[in-house]
Amino acid sequence: MAVIALKSPDIEVRVVDMNEKRIAEWNSDTLPVYEPGLDEVVRTARGRNLFFSTDVDGGIREADIIFVAVNTPTKMYGVGAGKAADLRYIEAVARKIAQVATGPKIIVEKSTIPVKTSETIKDILAANGQAGRMQVLSNPEFLAEGTAVADLFAPDRVLIGGERTPEGQKAVETLASVYARWVPRERIITTNLWSAELSKLVANAFLAQRISSINSVSALCEATGADVDEVAHAIGRDSRIGPKFLKASVGFGGSCFQKDILNLVYLCQRFGLPEVAAYWESVVKMNDWQKARFSSRIVSTLYNSAADKRIAVLGFAFKKDTNDTRETAAINICRDLLAEQAHVVVYDPRVSEAWIRQEVLGAGVENARLTVAKDPYEAARGAHVLAVVTEWDEFKGLDYTRIHESMAKPAHVFDGRNILDLPKLRAIGFRAQGIGKQEPQA
Ligand code: UGA
Image (cartoon, rainbow, N blue to C red):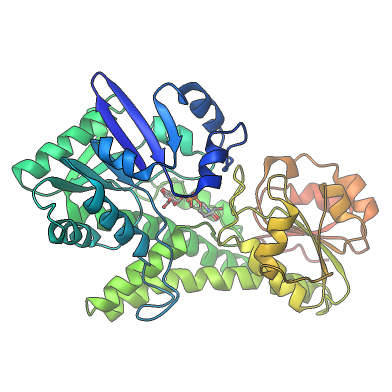
């Protein structure tokens, strides 16, 4: 949770969290998340007008604006299990604010939440004697990992939803004036509360839908001899379609897309719209299929048996320039290959060995068939397959001649991100396949 005290002309930001270890990390030289440019932002502002603290109560009391940025994972129990958002942390924060706050506050929902969650917050505040003093706004976050700092400095838009009452509009204006310090006014969109809440889910659903659409086309390309990158380029030149988010891949990952779509699906079901729910659910199903398709292509290429063969997996993060591994396609791919009794050797420049093991196997579970290499060359040595799962830039510049020499023959490359020069790899001697590209006939 971040609390902001508006001490005009200055703003003081205090990030408060009950987790002492986390706060200690934010106060140290090694921040708990890797994000290009973040170190510099924190280094410049920390101790000046940015503070990290475990004093949650004090933070709430002194704040003018409270950003609620807690986890809203998919609920894994009871009604809505596997789809609905688990709102227990949001509720706990609302209760905490109700208990501690002594003056008026603007409460800003930053976490991604189902539509109408602000009602829950307002209800808890009102039932605890805080009605009238608090304004609840929805200000969903659209930044993407790996480019979070750049997105923050130059957002396409900032969205602020508030109640259509004079007090609500005043709160919207207060928050808008904070953003207006660096965001042009015409990029700050104001809406009612429900529109803002829904727009967040819909934006992610649309982005994910584009990826599932192009991934579905990738399968057709492999079958027909069309090239998915060429198709994406051709359709993306239509200004109504646009070129972004049309990169075929092993499947999307990350903490947001799947969770938000399932949340949307659950909302549709709850509001009696099963056809709409099924439509959006198919985006997730297509993604699951794409991930499974990648592993099964590897196995079928290995004469239908990956057993005891070494397979090098390059990249584990859900995309480049982040160490985040939530819902990464690499987890499914490693598990599928381990189930085929392969020896899986993973290399990722940012993800630790312990974390890779935990993500693939589960906490405390051991499997000697899964190992983690220190560099891509070690991963590839003796391998039958080199599978690129994350599009790290460093994978483009590897010495593939050296890698080819060290691998078992035939040496296969599966480029799950279409970042490698396949004809060049074939000239070295590899049997190289991409996503949505037919292998040349021998
Ligand atoms: C996504 C949205 O892009 C942000 O706008 C949003 O704020 C964020 O979720 C969130 O809700 O917090 P993020 O998950 O960080 O951001 O990363 P993306 O760049 O959207 O990538 C998501 C996944 O899609 C990655 O696995 C990426 O490799 C994959 N992807 C992306 C493709 O496979 N093809 C593409 O063309 C683009």
